[in-house]
Image 1 (cartoon, rainbow, N blue to C red):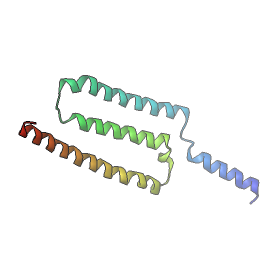
Image 2 (tube, rainbow, N blue to C red; image 1 turned 180 degrees about the vertical axis):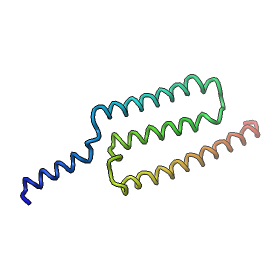
Image 3 (cartoon, rainbow, N blue to C red; image 1 turned 60 degrees about the vertical axis):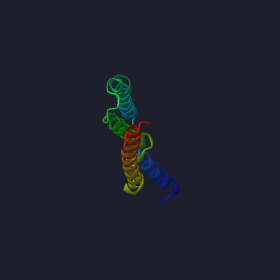
Image 4 (spheres, rainbow, N blue to C red; image 1 turned 90 degrees about the vertical axis):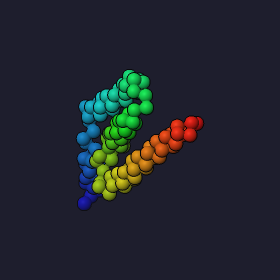
Length: 120
């Protein structure tokens, strides 16, 4: 195989990995992220003030943020086009972080309830 042929095959392989990222797809992902951010602002500025202390607002923020993280990591960091091992190296720690967030959220409610019982 000549050097020129190897270069062409390498260029085709590199281009083939990310050929799905067209301007149209980038704009689509941008508008999805914009919509999710608009929903987050709506929840924060309209719904949350009407329901102070509601326990369902934080999970909404967490889910919307994780969806945004998926799109950012998957499309803008090109991990959607990578091999399975690399994806698992990202997904497994994220699952542990989600678990940590849930545990810490539960723990914070315990301390808030304890402070209210003590009258602090």
